[in-house]
Length: 460
Image (cartoon, rainbow, N blue to C red):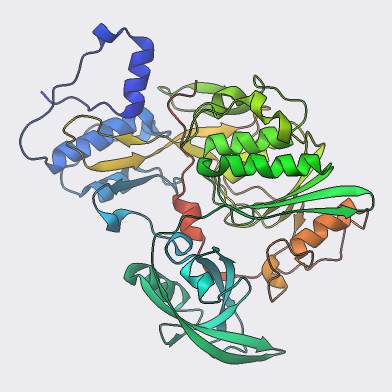
């Protein structure tokens, strides 16, 4: 008889609830794996974990392939749940940042040959793009010899990801004249990003201002984050600008770490976040101690070990954009329970939910898929959440309204300049661009869409 395979979280829950001898292992099917078996596994798992499990069918359809069947189960409001095949690289999400080391936007620019222009946002230090001289704020007007237009921006960019090679036709702008520059070839390779691009200290009107550009909640670099905050504390930082404008999220533990280093009046038992799931998953209140105990890589983080870097500020300035998502949004929302958050930039993506990782844990494994279905709604210690349409900034400013883009951390950047004007006692209204520029392609969007906030099974 076929029984539902145990996922990692199912097994975890069983071990908590039962004695070892009480757990009955499921009988593994034999013979070739069929679509019926795969789709039944998908449906059974979704029925237990999925946030919208009440709308699922009673039986699995054996006709569609796994990805199509999974897509058909998703609630119409679900933009983010994903499934992929572990041994099929083509099913894994690709991104410009982690393939080529750059992000960029394509925007309208009437003076350009095709009426559109690419604007480089980030360049990963040490990447091929950086070695070849591409930097933040550079322009290009062609991809693989084809002139950029509003109509072909997305398709040309997708071709880059699918082929693994690209030639960017660089350009310079002088007044209203766009001049063709060099053609720069790029080849995809796996890139590991050091997420701290810039940290600095400035003194403004008797205040010590710390600045941190942080682009991913990657537990591998938690020690770097703590080191940066130790330097801020040693310098006597009284204000902080946290730049998350391209940060697509990552680890729950990483978000808890950053919050603990910033927020005042908390201890290890203070509430970090609240999770609410379906009738099976229930409600969970997570302390800082719990969240820090299960990073995605490395050992547990002790709250007591953070004291050397804890700033305990009364307010924080957070810079955001349309691809600020997941753990970055969780950071913004959870900090609001403990301090004033002044948000500057554009509204965030709106990923107010988290997933669990579901795989077939049997040996040998029969089902070659990994699913990340949305499982929990996220809220802060005050129970506030529901930012499905993004978190709205206090001051709406688009960095693309002032070209060329300033280097990371530059005082001339309009978002940074607005924060500094408030810190220095300048006017809170006016003095910054009101224009919001339409993006016809945003290379960071794929990372933001596919980067799920994953709830570790050990948190309880």
